[in-house]
Length: 482
Length: 95
Image 1 (spheres, rainbow over the protein chains, first blue to last red):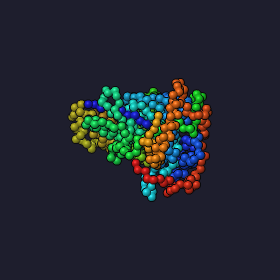
Image 2: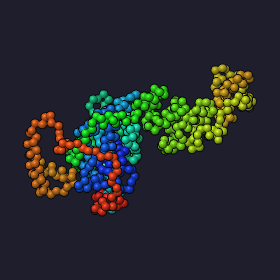
Image 3: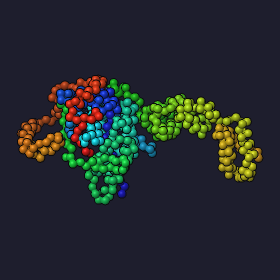
Image 4: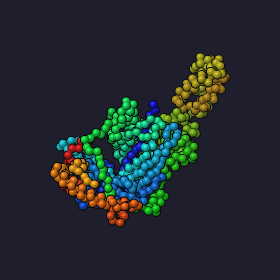
């Protein structure tokens, strides 16, 4: 039996407004507890919400980027539930008439194929506060700084068929929101959080299986792991003749398992109704078209342009365009060096490896894209070999300056001078008479392999600085003279 | 449509309201009467009428994205029954 996993994601994205969605309190991250929670956020009697225009502008930008219809009339509703970090006793959100209607986006998979993922809708809502369950005199502590921070909740159709696809979609949404600049997308700070609806069915089956919702997953890695382990759990239950109970689950990263959020509470009944404190928001075509004109180049458009303009594979282009900072870094390095393919390689392999290993963000990289281009130019013009370039790159990562000054300071310039190289070759030939004898008496077919020994010795003697091409030529000539 | 005492108890629990048996029965009675009025309204044919989001025929004015509130934690927390380290304290919430 072959099983298929069916996944839909609900992604919560904090919008990068200065103030909250319904009050003028600051949304800055990291402030002391409750210093950014005003009377409106605290649901003091007599306060009224006033909606923040920027939150609408950001939501419209997102909708346009997803090719969605924009809700020209959108209505806020109250979703009623009781929890101490929600002082009003309801979350102001949208249900029947959201700001962003159905849309679609494409995801690029590792095998180069594409899949369309449909957007069900996206709506504006307010975030809740934070509960701290450490022991405060036997009570829970509540920080309401986050209460009222604007969110868009982005709800996909169940269009993903593997954990990898779900991650690719999540990354796509992440790159769209960061390209648009409507959110910082920092999952570690909770700016982007994800709930995954996961079900399994036999391949070929039309009907969807019972789904479980895994709540509040806060990293790309955990999304992948949580979905995998949840699908395995469901398959095991069904194969043992059991049934999947539709429920909400939590992912425990330490144990790599999901577990039921069993609570004694009565099943939630949110009793939605239109919020009487807020009127319908009406946006006209002019407003929407003005926003459309301000949209930056989006990941898909950039990807296609990288493929056509720089002749990159679409997978490479997808990797490089995942975030705007990387895309800009690559593009500058490609333009300045005039070597787009080498630039793509250095950015995707060496630079990415360095950033990953040193846990550095590209924005904090010790060298510029122009300086990386400088290194590429020195490989291309033969000043250094590809191997030496790795050493120079290390120096750049250590903040030793640009490629030229490192090459100069460390004396890494490649030796292409024929006289100097001939001397190296002669020495190696003189010091290894047995190998030379072997080479001379060997078949032509075996010789190329044997040549490697001599090249190795010469490169070693030159500390890697000999120009390998020139060495090959001289060596062949000398050996043939033996 | 009528509601019974169980419905009221469930609603009370969702709203974290403590309600006595006697009161629940009375409230069930009162709410059932209100819902009787709603039943009458629902008998009206509303085909083609858009659900009303707000009784005022007006649209929401939006505010500019500016921070206009300053930190008033001290004044606000003076009204709270319990605080510590700037946090509002509430009866323990167990997940």
